[in-house]
Image 1: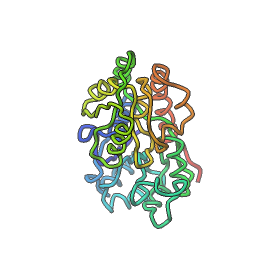
Image 2 (image 1 turned 45 degrees about the vertical axis):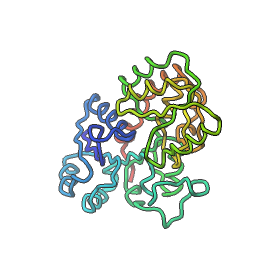
Image 3 (image 1 turned 180 degrees about the vertical axis):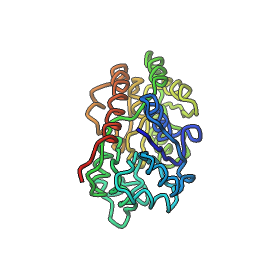
Image 4 (image 1 turned 90 degrees about the vertical axis):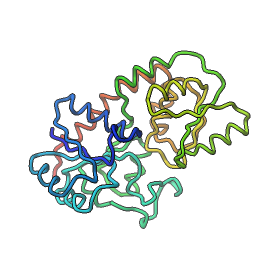
Length: 288
């Protein structure tokens, strides 16, 4: 396959969950012999879209908030020439369905619907994420991947730190992002007189090494998380969880079945499963 991968940022610019995921997927695509061209969304033009489309490329659209009007419209001219890799809820103006009953958003708060309708695939991260997209946009081209992606290097780091006793300390994400809700986690620990450690590191091993100094993860996201890698990492490391119902990963059947080393093994196996789902969906020939 020939792929144009479009995103607002890539892992060498931003160390976010979406960018980490995209980086691993791009590596897997290249390793499988596919040609991949990266474009930051604000740099691609309608001429680029036409040129690559006419050359037989399929577009994978990750975060696209910075894409211009003309390439956006050009992509929709040929239905099914692109797939959307949804990391949150960009189809909602406030990007958050959690304030609405059953996550059903009023029609006037929906945006970009036609962009999702014309996509070959809309890849979701979990069951609840896929359901939210389907019901709000009323589309049937959603593919639930059911798992995030961890690289081989990250899996080795998780195995390295998955063994050992944990002191009775709570891990709290040290984030200024209000949707990560650090304040409520701090209040939770204060009320219970629970010692805590604020964790944050731009380097993956540094972050994991901080987390394993704790017995549990305390995390109350304010927005419905499409998956939530941190919650799964805590469970892989054997930590207890104090959280709410806004984590997409907990909607998957495997979440309660596996923990610790068993979960690490499962997550490692699922990397090939997720990649297989993506490549199969990209290569599918749709009937008119």
